[in-house]
Image (cartoon, rainbow, N blue to C red; front, side, top):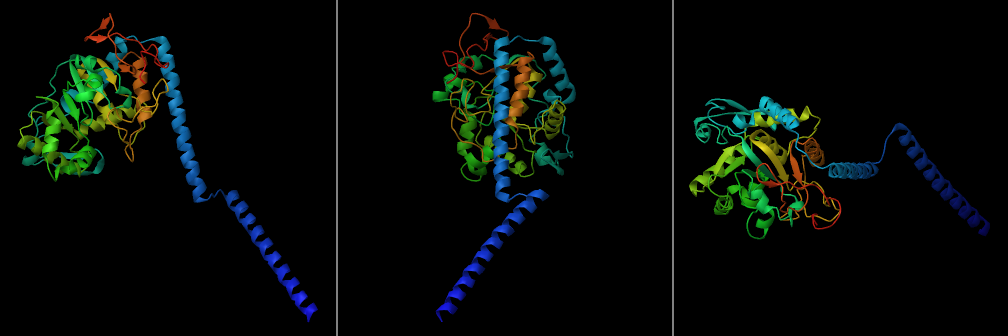
Amino acid sequence: MLRHRALLKLLFCAGLCIFIAGTVLASLYITFHYRKKGFRSPHSATQRSAATAVCQSCREEDAIRRRVLQLEARGWERQEESYQKLRSGLLRDCRGISEAVMTQENTPLGSKVIYDGEKQRHIEIDQKIFSTFPQESPIGNVTFASCAVIGNGGILLGSGCGEEIDRADFVVRCNLPPVEGRFYSDVGNKTDLVTANPSILLERFAALSERRRPFADCVSRYGIGTLLALPAFSYGRNTPLSLRALYTLQDFGTPAQPVFLNPQYLGSLARFWRARGLRALRLSTGLMVTSLALELCSSVRLYGFWPFDRGPDGSPLSHHYYDDQHSPTSIHAMPAEFYQLLELHGQGVLRIQLRKCQRQQGEERGGQPDTTWASLTQPGPGSVG
């Protein structure tokens, strides 16, 4: 009996060992087979994708930092020929002065307008919508001596650029940023044109479906005659939202003038930059208004444009100068766009301000200090920290 039990136990152990060995061999075979065929587990693919994205971001940041160092060493000098060449291209291909804003001249009653974010969709301009358009472009066919385009990057915080910004003849801001109180010394408050993305209306003002006074008060702080540019025809869902914004400002007697960005102009602008190597699902508001400023102004300076969470000197930055809130998703190629703008800086077409502003004895055209990029990458009195 004992010998019988021992034999059964031995057979059981042998079978168990054979089963385990078979499982291991099968796993090794499957792994080898799938690798040979080029298959990978979903988790490893996701991890590699995330790692690739991080590496790509690092490469972009490193490339931009190296370019900044090169430009810093060389110094900035305006190149009139380069500026005129780019401006002529914008005037010819995009015609922002007359086409950027929808008017009764460039969009007649009954026109079929194609949404620039939904090419398969269009809307016919009826009398109700047509009546909201100004008769002609409110921008006017005037060339300003100097323009300041204000991004919302954290690099502006502590810059002391407010006074310099307010000296510009035409000031453009993006997405209804705060300009009062503690921010005034860094960003100024003069505003000739300010944009409002639909996400701002949705997130900050509940799509104007509840109390509308906060939105009217927010826009009022930019002053009389400020143009509020709304992308009413980028996507179908933005049309009723933008109309609610316009009616709200009219109902509350807000002194700003709401206007709608022309999708035809935005499409032309996308093609213009695509032909110059920029690949982006959609242009950012910053690049759109910078392009318009290059048509409008003899001298263009950018503030608050920097796409990374560490400044040129390596110091940590908040995402915006007024908060550290990131968008959950982005359809913009911000580093690639910034590199394009950096190249325009290098070509003497426009200037990018990446450090604290300070008064200088020399003044360039338009009343803006003729500063250089000295101490851009080293902490010190001229750096943004």
